[in-house]
Picture 1: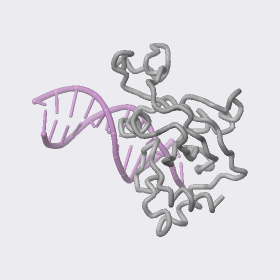
Picture 2 (picture 1 turned 180 degrees about the vertical axis):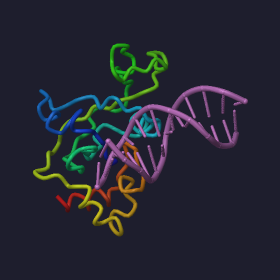
Picture 3 (picture 1 turned 90 degrees about the horizontal axis):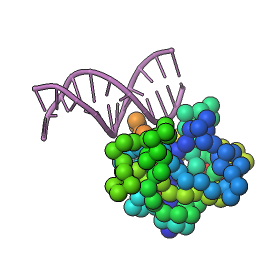
Picture 4 (picture 1 turned 135 degrees about the vertical axis):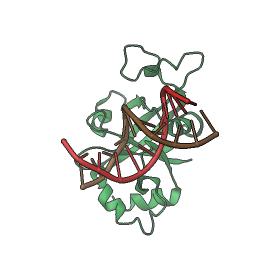
Length: 154
DNA sequence: GCCAACGTTGGC
DNA sequence: GCCAACGTTGGC
């Protein structure tokens, strides 16, 4: 089983919004970056766990954990001309963008803030992609060691 | 709102 | 295939 971190702007889709859904499950759509797409399409497997990260907000940080409940399949929002995330270059025969389905596993009582994560940037989290300068990747792998360490910060 | 960093686009 | 211009991300 692999571990991941997935970013979302809470103003667009927050962990509370996920918790409010009937089955606490949704397609993680709208990713339009090839590196992230490749992970959604090729690497994320049913049963994997991912941190749900809130970005571009008052308190950036990890808000909880989701489980991947369906591996990669084409992003329908890219095929819908009326949708904000429509991409005319993506077609049903040759889909360009992918989603996975995620289900809420745990909502942390308190966010593990970016500040707290940064406190360990010199040691346990030295290689965490999230903390790399200029990092913009919205879906990224997390090692088991990083995952376990971050859980101790909750 | 600012700005650094980075990915993408398009002219050549 | 290069690279400047542009758009986006995301923290502050």
